[in-house]
Length: 93
Image (cartoon, rainbow, N blue to C red; front, side):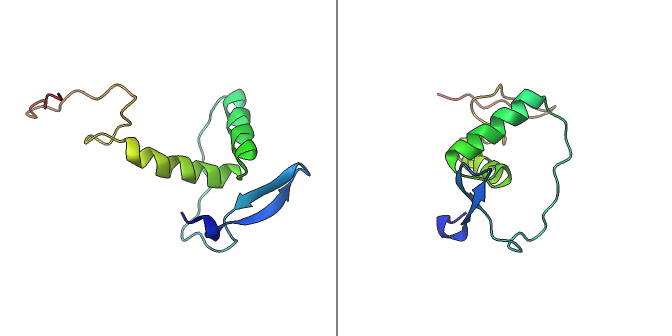
């Protein structure tokens, strides 16, 4: 995402936060999963303190995670899955 693609709008009177311009998302959806309330509140707080809306902040977090994925597509700071049947393990040095 390019920094110049965002625009500012007032958020709860605190400060301006960056959001994607209306109509720029190609296929937007509402995320429909359940998480603990305190986790959602903390995520919103981190996003707001970072100067972004929660939705834009989530997109930036996902973009950032792309640099931390192993060859299996799992973040390198999580336990890695076992090799599938018939797949040989690759030792890392």
